[in-house]
Image 1 (cartoon, rainbow, N blue to C red):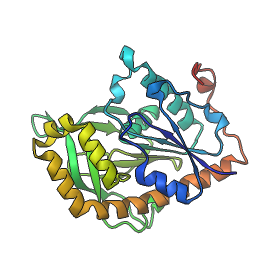
Image 2: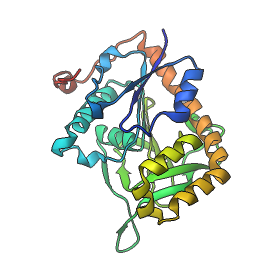
Image 3: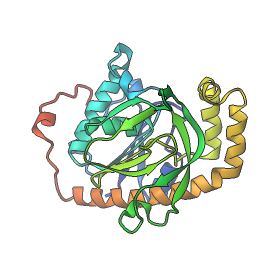
Length: 271
């Protein structure tokens, strides 16, 4: 049976990009769901052949209690059920923050210096792997550092049982996993050059606030210099991630993972 990449998307310009291409090359089907538009999130126990990919967006996980963001709270409840049923999931940016909170972690404003000052980490910069490739299949073949795109102003505080995989200069929690079935990336390894231009235009005020009025041109120039390195490292990482995720879906085809009782009893009215 064909594996489906269940893409949870929150804004038009942040799609699966390179990760979607890799999934299609493996024969996976792609199904895009927009919870921000009221799309129905499928019940986790009815998706044994699916890998969830929860993408980013300009909203923050801590906005979920605002009246207009009720859909985000619902998505968090859905992701909690998905995670607790050991369904495979990859979270990127907002998706990684949702995953961390769903597993018992938290998210706060990224701050640096003393006294602490808020920082928007935007632009190209290295992430440094904190684990050995001999011990961690997800980073096999990676050099000590990998180029990434950063586009955030928050910091994830990982749940106790998470494994930290990579950090950047200003933000420790860049890549992590929880068990074998859940992977989170605060940074972006999925971005493509054509879509970067959409990001710059859609988030122009955010770019200016973080980098100044020359920030957009700086990002374009940096992509010319660094984009191929980012895409190479991203392809390598996501290939390993999809290998790991597909091995889990293979097991789920032959076995039902029961949800915890408190998740079983929770109502998901939009499913």
